[in-house]
Each structure stands twice: as C-alpha cells, then as structure tokens.
Length: 462
Figure 1 (cartoon, helix red, strand yellow):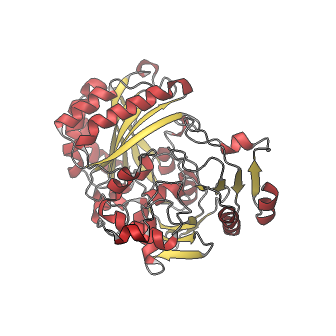
Figure 2: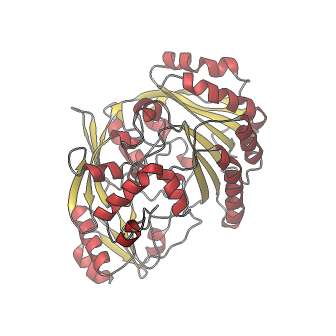
Figure 3: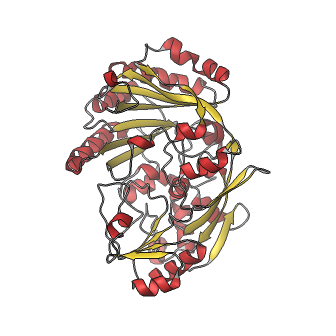
C-alpha cells in the first residue's frame, strides 16, 4: 500500500513500519489514540487529489488533518488513510486589497506572523497553535469577533477538492451553495486547499488578563452580562472560570488559586482602551492581578500557547448561550470551584456585535442570536486523570445546558452524535444535508462532525 501511494504523491507517506509513525500519528488530544494504516503528508493540491483518489478506490476510511488542533481527534482514523495537510503552509498577503491567501496546514500563528508585517489581521481564535482550516470551517471566533465578525464572515473564497477528485473554487459567485455550506458546516464537503480571507487593520492592541478570586465570580459574572452590550465593539472581553497555573509568568503567591478572569483585547489606542475599560476598574472589586498592557496582536494571540502544548488530556463540551441568569451563574461557580486540575476551565466567548449582523441563514453557522459561545474543558497532563476530567466536564455541562440555546460550536464538541449536530445547525441542517448529497453523496468525508446523507427513500417517506 505505502509504495503504491508513495509513487502517486510528492509528499511523504508514513506507515506503521516508519520509525516516525508514532510521532506523526500523535494527536493534539492525548486522551485519544488512533492507528491509521498510512499518513499521506501532502505538499500541494495535486498530492491531495492523488491521495484522495487512492483512498477512495481502496475503500479506506479517510480523515483530513490540517493543523491537528481537534478535540475529538477527527483528524485521524483507525485502519484508514490520513490526508495530512500540515506541510501546506503558504501564506500570501496582498496589501493592495488587504486580502490573505492561506494554505490549509497553517496555524493561526502562521497567519498572524504574515499579516502583522502589513498591519493586518484575520479574525480567528485565541490560541496561535490552532489550525486555520478546521477553525474556519467550524466558524471561527476570538478577539476580533465583536469588531469584524466570525472567521467565516471574512472568507472570500476557497479552493476545494471534492469527493470525486474535481477541484472547484467556492465563493459568492462560484458554487455559492458550497460556499454557504463551508462557512460553518465543517469538513463535510471536501478538502479545502486554499482559503482567501479579508484582513483588517490591526497591529498593536491593548489587552491581557485580569484575575479576581473565585469568591467574587458571581458578582463579576452578573456585572459582565450587563456590561457587554454597552461595551464598544473594539473591546472584546471573554470571561473565564479558571485556576492560576503553578508556573511562570504568574506570581507564585497566586499559583493554584481558583479565579474568575476577564481576558481583554481592545483594537485601538491605549487611551481609547483605558476609556472603554474604565468601568471594569471603577465598578468591580480590586483584582488579584491586572496584566493588561499594550502589545503586538500576535503576542496576545499566542499568550496561552505555552500552557496548552500538544498531547495533554482534553475533554470539552460546548453550548451557545443567549442569556446569563442568576441561576446559571450559581451553577457555573459551583462546578468551576471543584475543577479537577489547574488547566481545567470554562470560557464564555462573546459572539455579539458584528457576528450578529449576519443573518442566521446567510451561512451554515445558525446561532447568530447567541451572545456567547461557551466551552467547558477538563484538561491535564496525566492520562490517569482522563476519567476525572471527562466526568467533571460532563457534570458541569449537564448543569448548565438547560440555561443555553442547545446547539454548540462544532469546534467545541466531542463525538456527541447526530442529535447534537442537528441542534447546532437547527433550521440550516436540511439545507446542509442537501448540499452534502450533491457534493459528497457517498459520505466519503464522514470522519468529522458528520452531516448525514439521507437515502432517497427516507426523504420521500417524510
């Protein structure tokens, strides 16, 4: 198998006989272990076409891996073929129209590095090691969402290798149905080998973390829900219930202390930022730590990377949240106060502002009525704690879920079944299924948060 596949592609094919097999197949989430038959490390679109044709003709399960930053390990498979795009890392910035063309192996950090030189940024997430491909196809939210929208709201076009081996460009004017589906529908429709984004003027920002003791969390969360709608869209404060890691650069006297945090980013001058953040300092208790300062945007984007290396144990659950009631706040504080490890957390990411000015049927991302995207993550380095991490995250989620909109950001879901996927896409699900049936009728791309292709007889029986 390996020899035949290697003859078809320029990139390297790695199988179980390679001394780098275990290193190459390792996943970001150390809780998940998968053993593919082969990993095709593609170097260009031609390699992707050839590898896909090989896997399809051999009847193999096929997984697509970009940056590899996937919680449920859907960038790999057992006894199948992994099409690994991580070597495809080209980034081209056009300063004339502030657009950026990005290959699918890039991380956010790769994109930030390239765009920062031109005083630009593409709205993305909050961890530089996140793969831009998976982030985008799932929606993409982070520090710039309130000002410039989701990552998908800034996607101009995408080159896609389809299940039958054809390559098409999806945009508003070319394959618009596919373009609609790609913007939030995940990896269900093909292998994207190039993204073209609209970038925005972002260079130096004012931001960083502010910590309060967990005992102040209920007061701060209640204040935060009222403050956010009044905050200028240039300010994006996300809220976290966390523990201060016992490591630098945090003060030793705070190590291991449970906290409520606001992590802020303001796009504008330091003077404008101070004015926007004045209520935080005037209306809330004295913080344990105020780490806000002026910094290059990539420095803020990569701030958490040292705490979250590849290979940790992860179990995460998400939901979209419209309102933060007093009852929900009490449940948050109760469960966050019993987190099992220092890295375990709950984050509420704002997805209001510009993100809400896109209609719920304009992209596959349905929940434009949400105020926050919530994630609860049990995280730790010790495989022996995997059960404890999972139990804590599930129990926390079950307590909070009744206070949410029901669906979740697909990039914050484990392998949770069709009902959860349907809840995520809501009224957009049937349209996604119809587009899936057109572009991938055999469900070749199924190792993902899968949108199922219904059989004709099932559809006619409805």
